[in-house]
Image (cartoon, rainbow, N blue to C red; front, side):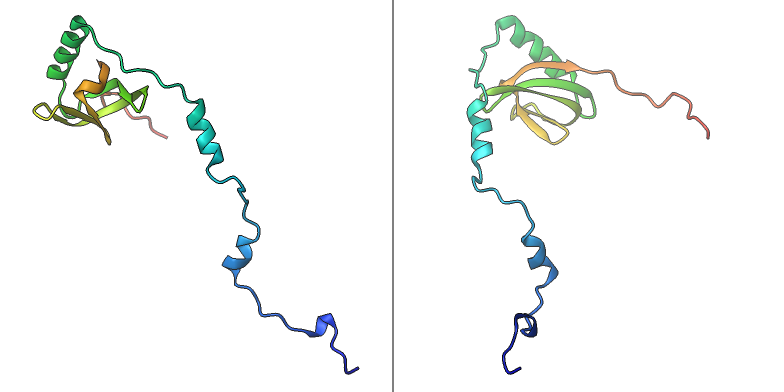
Length: 127
């Protein structure tokens, strides 16, 4: 009885955070999936707007103001992206438009479309 068995030894308890780490998923190729997605992304060259398209874009830019609802298609990082929302800022001197939290340079905008604003004139339903 002088020998200690495995059950007789006391191991210090592991705290919960360290124990949970044992069961977290392991990504052996960290960053590999992101690299694959980036490689699969098709990059397109920035399109040069025609004179008519530039004039139409300038007209739309002169009509819109803060709090207007718009949809913009713009060039960013080798692709065209679309954003829809409320104009939260516009600086005609510096040449940028902010839709919600997305700031877009005028020169990157390919298309700008004003959207109808939602009105609160509909009666509220009662439960």
